[in-house]
Image (cartoon, rainbow, N blue to C red):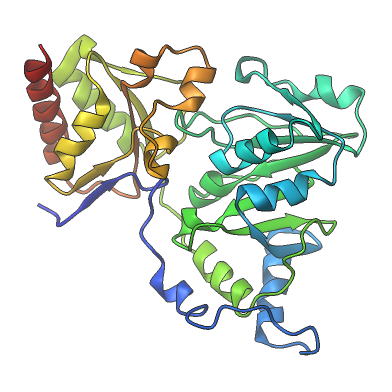
Length: 323
């Protein structure tokens, strides 16, 4: 058996020590008096990678997004965004008009028709917790911003957008380290020593996608039958939004943890909150059903037999204990 098995790959990635060594311990703003140095080369590489004018450090936190949102008069968003983005919108609810776009009717062309550049539409390519993929088309009038953190890690094609956000934590960098990629400058975080080089190297790692997630589900379905199901359709490769009926998956997560197998139930679990997934609740799932979600994401799975066996055994044991 492997020492550790991470089935929380996208939500809780391993720290990228090699990239972070470029930043530690001297992680400071560069003086504006310093002329072009090697980090400028990596800023240029990042700009070229995304074909944008700017690829700048960004605080991927509610504070960072508050600063960003203040550039606009109106915001349209989905509830499946990262917690920090939603938190920033909540903080500005009395300052900027905001509207929820239902995932069931994600047609941004309707919004774009009567919008202008002061209207922001912000969406994730891959929805938090349910890992379904949004089909995002570019807009003509509004400003479109897209969180590509998960999708870029999974080597997916980028949608057309004015602005891209990347959460550095998804690539093994520190929490709040982010990148904003755009043709206009939207952030005050312009230069940080070695930041661009660290981010560039972190982004180089791409996941080899395959159909292991489908095989894993088929094997679990064979063992557990109607007690297991999926929460969403059209989910991304290397992800599996499972519903394990009749149990609180937090108990399953704790049990698997003893065998060094790591799974996340939701973004709230990763952030340390003891409450069901906000995304699932917003989609109309009741609290009991929301607690049945077990969000699996992975890089590679080398021993699918053992994983199926451990999840099956843990599930059956919890059912007996909770009967």
